[in-house]
Image (cartoon, rainbow, N blue to C red; front, side):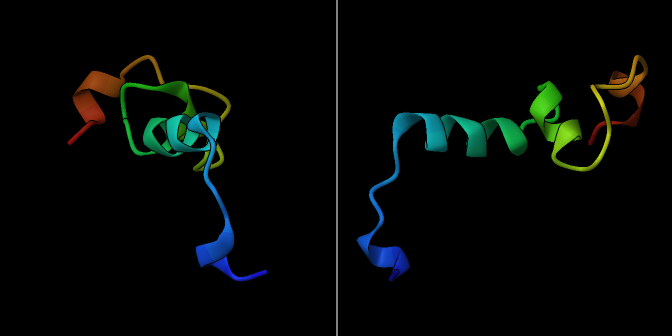
Length: 45
């Protein structure tokens, strides 16, 4: 399948955005952690 033929759903786009947002649990889960750490504010960018 050619990637240019794939039509992204809103859920796909939301998931991608969440994985890039350090305020979201999906950011940490996509990096192998179970959830956002308690001290996430002190370690964020």
